[in-house]
Length: 307
Image (tube, rainbow, N blue to C red; front, side, top):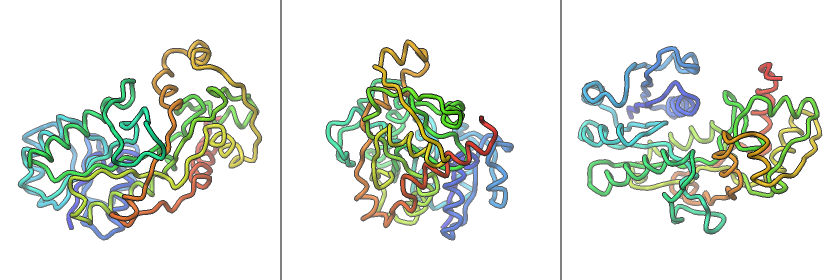
């Protein structure tokens, strides 16, 4: 099987490419920047440099590549339109979405039948637009598309989610130095973590399964924890204890600024999802427990001098 991974030098994308390669697929990486951060990790794979929104370029790539599956780690409606136009040049398409498209949740754990596409705040409108574009192309018969929707992604190569909904560098140093962490309303909202390597494996499994066309799959860790527990797991991984101070939403905005509004709004939502469809249809299950995924991310961040 020949697979093209668009965005294959990014954090998520290079893990997808590595998983596809480990699965035995003939894997090609495509990216705009030949010197992207994770280029070295996939340097052994064939590389194409160019933009997925360049119509003529993508026509040449797809026509000459004879790919069975095209995977886009950061999809956009514009790119989906081009891929749908040239769909006769390859068999199937898979894109990376987000469980954020389901929010605000109407029930937990939310499954793939949950209403989606009504998120009104920053952060997930792009994911909603990409999923809508893909499913419109599927319904029109122009794309054999699949979307995998991960929850909050952890793992080496990226800063961990912080206590106010971002990925700020000070989060780990705050824990290491014993600084009291701010929490929204006690930190009782649920949070579900998935390791980036587990996510990569899910893409490889979907690529190898033609029956996934037209489907969406939640790719999440097996259990949800509260935001407070998540912060405690980060501290435990660093052999530290942590104290908290509770605040309302408005108090946190006033303290930290408007820039945190989008992330804080999502952190206020329960993130709790069902993964049975991915287990049954993809044969996927998370190898990393939540504590293990959190610990690896925290320890790497602490070891990179971000203190």
